[in-house]
Length: 248
Image (cartoon, rainbow, N blue to C red; front, side, top):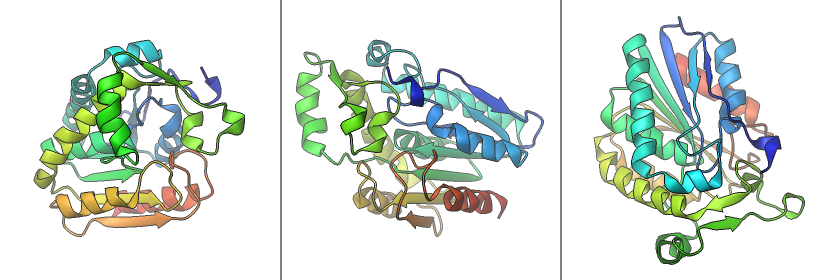
């Protein structure tokens, strides 16, 4: 397990603030991915919650035992509770966390949805949608490459291997959310890095063409990696624009 970018902890700050913000990390990652954004928002006096999704922050084997419905139920319960305590509620998600944020926007009257590096359609669609569906019960785990030789920063985060049964659940989650996107009228802010190796431009097109939000905002950055809420050359700009979106 790569402990440098792995966090088993859940976080909550400023419980008495009337504005609640719920952060959701990505597939097979942990709260490590969103902790710096959580700290930033907490310093701006918002009620911030960042929890590990079921099967995350534990083991690859446990992640493979969870269903996409477990992720949906967890975030739904957390946001329902936050909404009962808050005057305004925002959700922020990275990668699969962005997909879950879109789901939440389809069922709650949220004040805003902020998504970055969203993966509604996989870059390697044939492998994920077809080959992995067949093979994941046999090859349940795929080891990640040696980080010292890795050119894809996303692979440095979370587990040291991919939980392939859980990846199939991610595919099922996407199918559900894409069917619900026409229900989304929440003010939406989309963030995308032009050098992202996992989230392609096609994901932006899918979101813009599917949701019914009025004039969704789009921020393109040039240097951020896929985990764009963690430390990267565009982080200051990304955080400033998130704050502006929440305050407007």
